[in-house]
Length: 347
Image 1: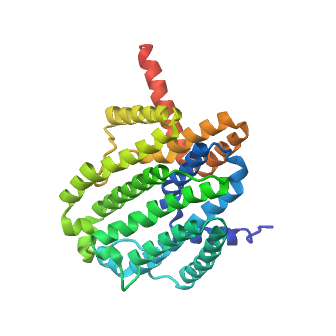
Image 2: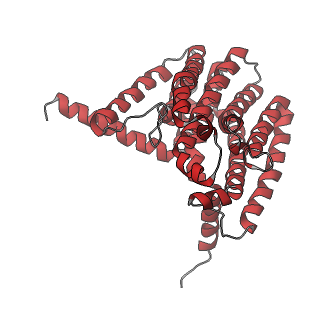
Image 3: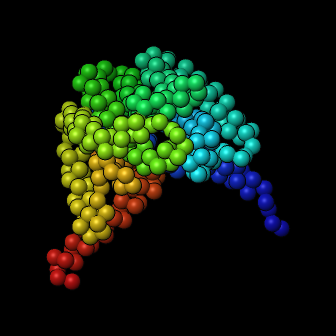
């Protein structure tokens, strides 16, 4: 006898994932955030394994926020997407599912914020900051997305700056040790600059569609060429300096060593495939994003695992959570290594 009942929750979960655009932001947003948690705990000299339940709660809180952002962005973009001929995940569908998701996110977000307040009021304000930034970005009458520079700042703050600073603040509170201002400064500068570069890339990719829809993004106002130059000559150097400050303060070798591995892999992709990662170029891979997603968390988890062997369990958990990007990078590394060996042997 055929049983069809299990297909119902599977279909619902698929609909939820599609509406929330989970695949678009899961690894890209959250693997670097968890990496900063590992780096901060490592800097404070504590093991990360005892903090796993709290870390998973932080991840859940960020997922709730990201889901809220995805749904309101699609909901408020319906007319613009129609004019631009772009697919919109909620257009022409029942409003019940996105409305239910939004209500759930708001209730869950309030609960998470209250919990964070018990540990650190600053953390709650940082968590709230991300919600406010994205609400201003998407919702009328503010709709910062159509207001040039403030839209870029709102997106960068909501997607990178506030989540990263929240992570640092909570790690400090949960470990029970204060962090120096330099650590906050390095993480904050890197996160904001990284967020600015990513939203500029998104706006460069969507420039034609935004023009057709009449959306006045900052790239449309200042022009793609100026946006690229600012990203390459100002924003990217700040991003690199901020992240370099984080690495210097951490005093760890593994992040630097794996940065070398990442750059070598990028060299292979460029020479053999012509697939070059760019600082800020439309329709191109972004330089360092793969490092932030894969090598950055891996480096600090290796440091923690050597210090506290039980933390190797967290390494396994992280790889499971972000298996897609880790598997793809591992496949590319094996390919590059085998090619190097074959070439050195003259095969």
